[in-house]
Image 1 (cartoon, helix red, strand yellow):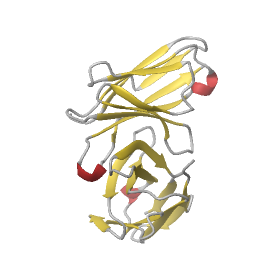
Image 2 (cartoon, chains in turn purple, yellow):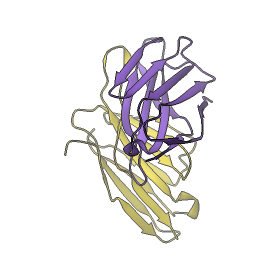
Image 3 (cartoon, one colour):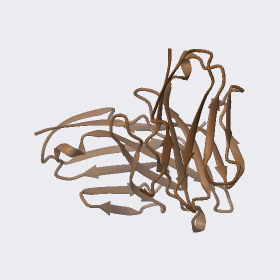
Image 4 (cartoon, helix red, strand yellow):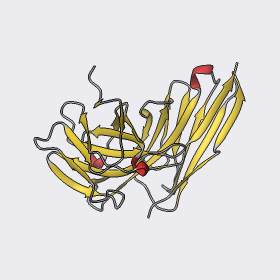
Length: 116
Length: 116
């Protein structure tokens, strides 16, 4: 089945530093999504990517859809304490007709800790 | 609040009891998904509906699990004869169907199940 490898597993950084995390897949995805999850809550969608090579920003967050469609990265610039949480990548495949499969495949998550 | 709503937020049950969770998706979203998440892991796909039709079920969904979406709006997930291994966060998500299969899945806050 499809597998997503997300790295690093955890990061400890100082407030103000930039952060980078990435996801690689053994299979092609047609959509990449990045989520943030706080303890005891559901994942919150941060960024959605739909085209290979696409670079999308959302405030201090920037994400890119890899050219091979098998990878994606997320950057957070000038981190702040409220960036603390678990970040997940998720991939979605499509059939030949362009209709998306329903199943999102998630990475294992990157735990981000920001020290003030 | 117009987001995905799940009820209850927490459920503690004795082993062998049946439990039912409810999910109300974002209005007009055709697709509704159920995921399960255990500690330290990303969400794992269980099943999804497009309108009333259940289009895919994971092998994780044993015979003790059943999901319904009778009118294409809210959905229920029932677990019969619960086991301790069923303890997890059960997440519901919904998404619209956009052109070219683009889709963004939005999650509810989850139902935390503890089987004692």
